[in-house]
Image 1 (tube, rainbow, N blue to C red):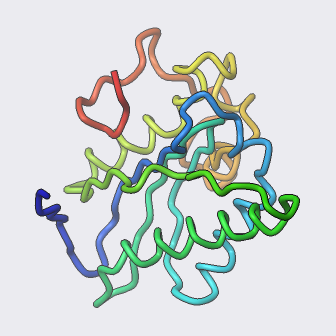
Image 2: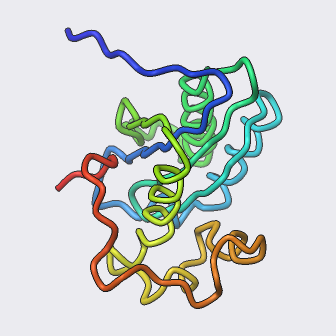
Length: 174
């Protein structure tokens, strides 16, 4: 078994990708209320700031900024996945065999500077367009794009260039 090492910088901003075990599933958007409740529960227990987020049918991307002197994103992800999974399993009929919902790990990248932050923000908000789920970032309802527009971070008509932003190894499978 390989040793999995993660970069941990207290108070840093991190880009994450978390995938469902079944990459053909639409569970995350179908159960968006359950996912949001799981996120709120984790935020109550271990606060952090969600700078950006997009939820797609089978995976999600986000940027979190952790509190000063805190680098424990792994336990936050564990709690989020566990809360979401337990809620869904409690809704299943008795004796339903459990199937894994999430892939075991998540992909993480420590944001290095303002350019890196902006690149990942753009990547997150363009992702529904990239996957053919929306014609424009503003058309996808499961994203922080509209919130970012309201904060003045994007103009309402923002759209990435004709080619999606290309940043290698951002947590997507080819």
